[in-house]
Image 1 (tube, rainbow, N blue to C red):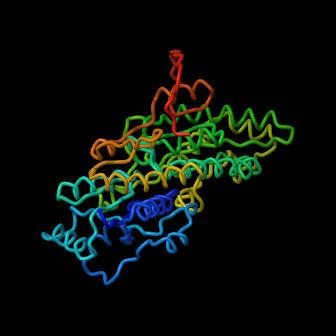
Image 2 (cartoon, rainbow, N blue to C red):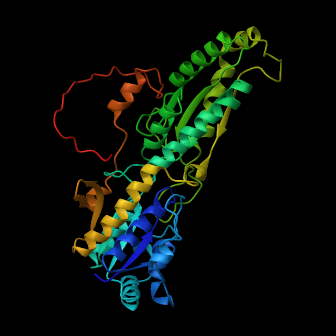
Length: 401
């Protein structure tokens, strides 16, 4: 293992530059050369047409800042299997041979990981540095902590405008199949309600919770001001378990249908119920807010920060994990271990697992949901009593930090 290529793929997020820097620094310290293959799998497919590649020598690595989100290597959403070229794998191997690259460090999520499995089956040595802000792989994935922190900050900040205007705020964030970031970001933002794909949403239950808590806050305020924050994952389902998709739109390169807009849907469902609720007119009159024809029910506003939750700066946790993932991936390749995903460092051991197992989707633990339901957060269903066990541990505990 003399020359290593670095690829980052899928969506951008925090901690990726730390992966790039960690891999390059470790490669150099072990006497290997490290090269950026730009623009994800599109760059890998077109590698044979490149004239030169950027080598991450120490002076070039020094210019890569580990904290900013995004990736020095660039991304694209390309699935190798779907490229309409019967010679695509031979083309990729020719590109790797052209530059003498012996192995690849690839950072990405489940879609990226599925391509790693594909490339490995074709005899291309790859190690997966797990990356997805959705946190839905089996191991921790770089980017999740950064995104959760940003969601929490946005949610907390939006309460100022919500309280000023006596609005219900619906904050829609990423999370198509798993709601980890909405869940954890919402908890950290002190959200009143959190809607995630794992729990089908009953909007009658959500409305009752929102109406009671919001109206009580306003009534108890000496200036009659209050707000109610809902954090919504984009992939929520209705109470029948149906995903909210736009059937008129196409699918992306990985086969995903376009979602219809969860935040907007929640706003519509709550507003409809406010208008049909006879007690709301009385509330608006009591609080001296009622204006016939203009201001008859509380406003429900949607906010979609979109890519703002995945850009900017990385959390310290993600920088640490990213550097360790990149460096460990290089060491795994050096040891002749490929087709695997880095999990964590445990003392002086690199923990890893087979990539097909690593990219198996992990959902929010509903036992954790029950704990927060008992604290008063609404998850769009009737609260379920939490049944907790108690366990004492002794001795050394294996933990990340």
